[in-house]
Amino acid sequence: MTETIMPEERLRMIDPQFVVPVVAFLASPANQVETGSIFEAGAGFVRKIRWERSRGLSLNPDSSLNPTALIRRWDEVNSFASSPEHPNVPVLSGLGETGSVSGSPITTNSVSFQGQVAVVVGATR
Amino acid sequence: MSTNSRGHFRQSCNILNRSGHVYASLLTRMGASVIVFENHGVVNKQIQDLNSQFAVCKNLASLKSAIEKVGKVNLVVTTCEPHESRYFDSHNTETWTHTVDSSLTSIYQLFRLLWPFFQKQKQGKVVLEISPVGIYGHPGQSAFSSAVSLSSNSTNFTLIRVFNRC
Image (cartoon, rainbow over all chains, first blue to last red; front, top):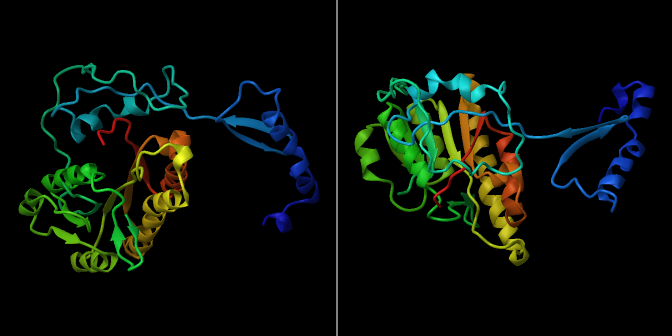
């Protein structure tokens, strides 16, 4: 698709012959470590891609968990500054434990969808 | 949901819509006009009582008509769920086809219907709620993992539901 717009030297670099060795190693008996991983390879580069999960936010699973409470602490959900994790399975630890909520729980939700139209697919009880 | 030979959407499993029910109820309480796209079972009457513009659509044509009547659609919430729990070695072609139809093809058909509305509005949000196997992969749910991985690239937000009571 991009052959007509790339310089000749760049086209030479992205030849499949520079990707196959990566696959050969991963598929060989010499690889005893890597499985379930995603790699980018080409033009001499070989890089691993992984999921990164923030430490996140833990709230009490009760009525205080509402959109307004989330707005106030959304920065914590988005922060990767403190020891992010690199998971390959969903988090299951912490289930059933009470979250630590600093200050008074926000029990009143002020987020509104007034004037908005929402389509929900499947709402059978 | 996927289409059968008659062109009607069908549910893959009637226990898969607990989240849909919760979304419809919550959004209604928060002031939204909610259109439910559902062709299986009975929608909770409480949702209908809360919202005068509530509508239930059982096929794509009626969904399109309902959106045209209201005049806009701001938010779409849909879920992907595994077709059924079955070990990989007992999968067959029908399992794969049904799962991909439910979790990918039906999403595509829904997006195709919504796209002209979003284009005209220059705004629209789609939330796809999926099981973690759609992100991390799972051999026993390989069809589902593949389908939702592709579906998740089509949405503004992908919510991964970690704890699932189904």
